[in-house]
Image (cartoon, rainbow, N blue to C red; front, side, top):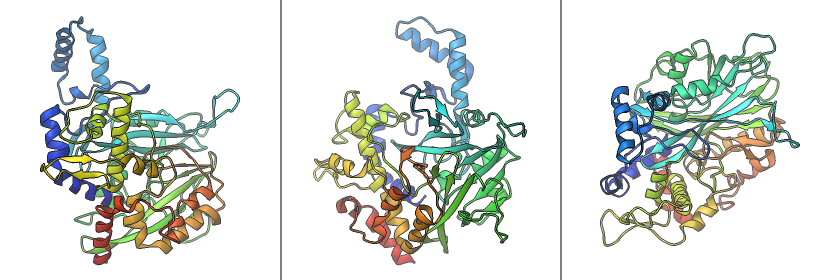
Length: 471
């Protein structure tokens, strides 16, 4: 949540450049849902909020206006049904789109099961990724929920996404054979793995959909500006708070041992401590090891920014961001322009004020990308990293605690994972304990594997300094 607060304030300060001006000059609609591409189903989000009768008339008129015959009512009805399944209501104010109220998101389901090296068929199909976009103005990045089917056939949900009917149905479609235990397809466990709002704001909707599911959370869940009960925040009492369970999970102690801990072990990181509403609040994240698939499931701890455009990103928003200067006309829609838009999106989300995004000294409200920005993207993307925001703002507050957690995940636990599934950006990432540990080398020496200083200087460093002075 902290990183989106800072980025949101930045985007507000540059509203003329990135929001108001493109809206006026290019007809860009803020916070519209991305179009499906790359084998994903098409979206009809332009019809969101329109009555079925009006939508039928709009689509028919649009087709006739371009010289084509009117589509059949059956086709339009199918499009409208799909559109309805992508609608949801954000019931708690946030700093990401839609801020509050009705919105629409598309969801992709991807199997993370192992493939047979001989024929490419998926084996052990018991883990999936559900993906939507997280949006902040024109900036869109992948957001992920991981679903595991346990041995009894029930489902375990990590960091649920926006509560669209499409999302719910895709999750429930992960159910399968339960070996006669009667659990097939039923969501039995929902996990809140961290403090960050984007990973828990929809939990209450999910508990309403799956009222019999048990709720598990990382420690330190907080509400702001008022402290409220679990029932109010999540819609249900928390079954258990996740501390550490990476060795001998059946030890009799004060913690409630989850019934799934023999299949999915976990270890909790104590990150930075911040003053939230006048109270010192420690931020936690719990990592999970799914034994059957040898997968490490994390939220924000590590990531790999893709070097190609993610499948759900809206081409128009990519083109908007791709411009060399914000006063330029919209560029031609080409793969190169879309990729440039993605690269600049990654830099903006990662650094807030990246080095080569410069205010025009002669024209107020105009921003220009100077030469060298692609080199900075290449230094950031395509490798396993601790994201700049997490590393600079959170982990710098408690490096010893982070180091202890890394030692548990990479060594003491004995977890033999060979891939990592984060909640942001790319997944799965082919990496094991050694690669995971190497991503945290900066804990011993901040000069190792450092990010460009000029990328940090104008955005993350000042915020980190303010946080340090407050605590």
